[in-house]
Image 1 (cartoon, rainbow, N blue to C red):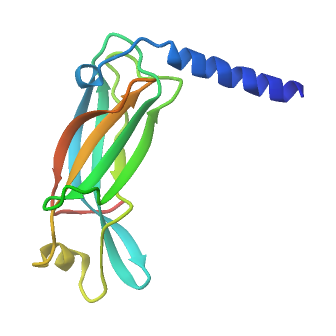
Image 2 (image 1 turned 90 degrees about the horizontal axis):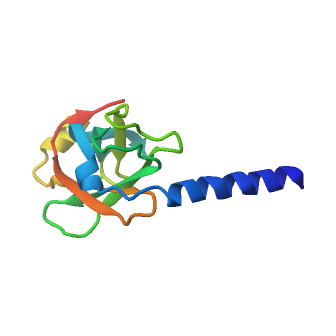
Length: 162
């Protein structure tokens, strides 16, 4: 009972500290740096090579306050289709926060969907005439602030491995 009470109290304090944090306009207070896009080799799935769009980046806090609990969502779309094709989600920093001027380690977001092929190498898949390019729509959220779209990046036709 006592352990459960402490866990509930800790969760309440964490939620309260995040909810009481001053709002930060992430479009002004957070920079996306060192962006690299490409097609991640997701291995062999059901006997077929699988490639998924991916984006690698760092985030820099350019605001004057510590940013706690930053969440990132990337929607992947085919360039010829406005509908979401796949997505990836990250909680970038937790309660420790990202201090003013600090930069995250490199972060990678991969789509859950992509292309598969059984009779082509991964490089041949990228060069296939039926291949449709993709783009990554980057959104972020801080504390209780609504999701905000930050940027859009084309996914280059390059192969990414671990």
